[in-house]
Image 1 (cartoon, rainbow, N blue to C red):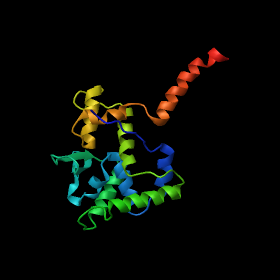
Image 2: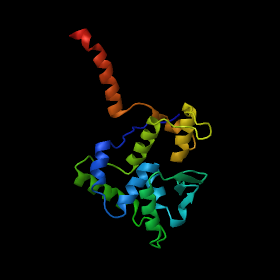
Image 3: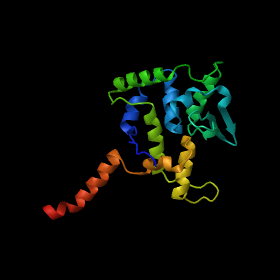
Image 4: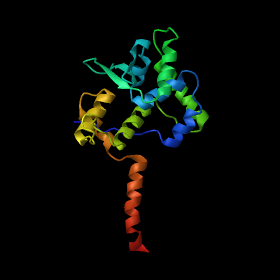
Length: 196
């Protein structure tokens, strides 16, 4: 049985406010979490040799640290700017691309949120935001050119997030938060004429 988790994605306006506050390596680190959905620990384990380019695509090799089978996954970086920033960090001749700890990332994010005037966020919320956007975007099957089936979408998201089962990502496909409020409001609008 899959445990139900709350999905609490970062809202668009929160990201815009937060992005203006990011400094130093965090200007690359938090956007990387957002566009890939990788875990904080996976991002902090990245090395320069984990960057790749092939047939016009650019990406990273992610070591899945949470899984028992410890596999590596190749993920595409959709932002050329973020990839260029990762390359620059890789040229700095450090063992790891990011030179801070999980605790430092957490504390820095809290400071940036405070400066941006938004609610305190956690690094894990970038993962939730990626997953929610994935579920709300029409995914195309690259082999057929047709939209992916619901099952294939779940399998692809589970794979991208480093989960072993598509059941683990079910909660991302269900309406939550503002989306659920919007659905409730639209149903309420249907009944408005009944009471006027």
